[in-house]
Amino acid sequence: MEPTGERTSRTAILLMLLCALCLCGGQFIWKCFHGLFAVLAGLAVYGIGAMAMLCAYRRGSLSVLQPLSSVSYALAVVLGAAFFQEAITTKKVLGVTAIMAGVFLLARGEK
Amino acid sequence: MMLAVSVLLMGMLASMASFCLKKAAGGRGGILKVLETPFLYLGGGFYLLSALLNLYLLRQLPYSVVVPLGSLTYLWTLLLAHRFLAEPITGRKIAGILLILLGVCFTVGAL
Image 1 (cartoon, rainbow over the protein chains, first blue to last red):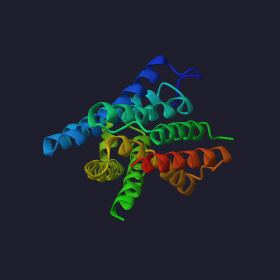
Image 2 (image 1 turned 30 degrees about the horizontal axis):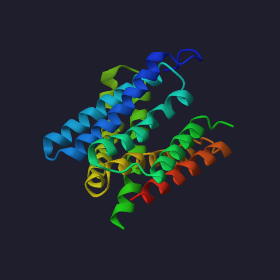
Image 3 (image 1 turned 120 degrees about the horizontal axis):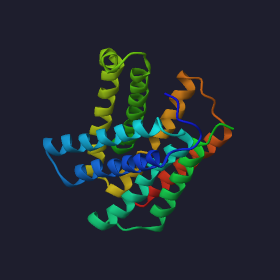
Image 4 (image 1 turned 90 degrees about the horizontal axis):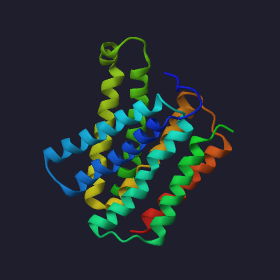
């Protein structure tokens, strides 16, 4: 399926953000809860994220959309501090920033 | 050690899963055709294994560290795409991968 035109639709961007949310959410469930139901719930959330990503890719260009899923890394640092008392250190901020920049470059890599 | 191997494997399996699912979705025909391809189940299996490793890592490491570790999948995808789809590795992509690796080192260093 070809993405429609060059403009990436707002829907596609929102879908990618949903994907990022699901990436965080699924692992959040696994961090908090144990047992078979938790595993299945996390997988279900992951599945929703995957669907959102597939829908998004049909509506826009990869080079714009793919980096958006990496906001999940920044979100994870925030959620870790909010819910798991995982301190937001300079190293973590630098690390996540570098990863996001790297993902951005990768997506625009056809040089 | 076990953790490092698990991290690398998790990314590799997720990457392989994406490849298989892409192959499964690529053929002509509707949803029924997709259900017939072995790649769908192979991809699903790889994803499940990757998810289990993800689960294991979440028990051992902080949430805000494990989620960004998922970015290593991009490295594997680059290598697999280069090897099997003859996608070129441009200078920009190398820069992107290096940034991701740098970011991962920082994030893990925050342990």
